[in-house]
Length: 299
Image 1 (tube, rainbow, N blue to C red):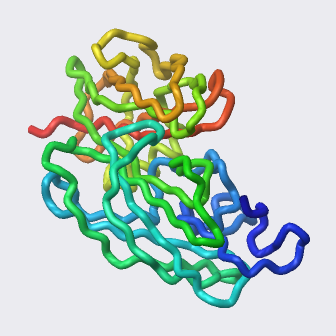
Image 2: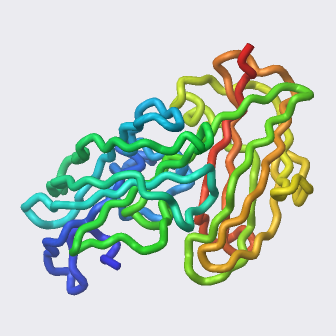
C-alpha cells in the first residue's frame, strides 16, 4: 500500500506516482478539514458510506439500459495526468461485496490536484442490468492504475480505490411492515466472525440521506428485526437489532429485515435505517453498509 500522505514516498522524497480515490466528500466535513483525497479510510463516521456522490446513475429500471459516470481524484505528486481504469459492478442489495457482477469499464485521465479539489469524470458507461434483477440494486466502482492498484477485496469503506451507492427504498405503514431482502457477504478471503447490525441513523446523517433522494426526514418511531432467509427471527425487535454471523471467505448469505413504523408516513418523507457488517463483536472494522429508506405506500 502507498504511504498515508499523498505525494510522499517511503523515504519522504517527492513521489510522482498517482494517488487515486473515488471521493466521498468535496466540502470539508470538519472545521479546518479538506476535501476527500483518499487518505482517510476507513471512512469517517460523518460520511454516508452507502451513498458516494461521485457515482452518478440515471433512472434505473431492470431490463433497460442504465447510464453511469464516476468521478475520480488524483492527489499524487506528479505533474502529468494518470490514465486510470474505472470498473463498475452491480449487485442485489447486499451488506459487503463478495462477487459483484461486472457492469462496464472506462479509462479516465486524472490530473494531479494538490492545491485545489478537482475531479476527472469518466465517459458515460451504458449497460443493461437483467430484467430479473430486483427493483433496487447496488452500484460498486473501483479505480486503479499500474502504479496505484486497488486492493482485491471489494471494500468501499476501507479502500480509497473503491466506492458504492447502496441504498434501497421500501414501502411501510402501521400494520404493514416492510420486509426487504438483502444479502450479507464477507469481502475478504479469510473466514471471520462479524456482527450484523441494523437500526437507526443519527438525525444529521438520516436527514442528509433523505435529502439526497429528494425526501424529508419523517418524524415517527420504528422497530426492526433481522430475519434469516426463511423468515425466522435472529435479532430484535428494537430500534437496533444485532446478531453474530460466521462467514467463510467470500461467503454470501441471505437475510431479511422486518421494519415497522409507529405512525403514517407522509408522501415525500422517509425513515432511514442503516445495516452494517462489522468485524469481530461489533467493535472492529465496518466492511459493509446498506441504507434502507422506509417510505409511504403509493396510493
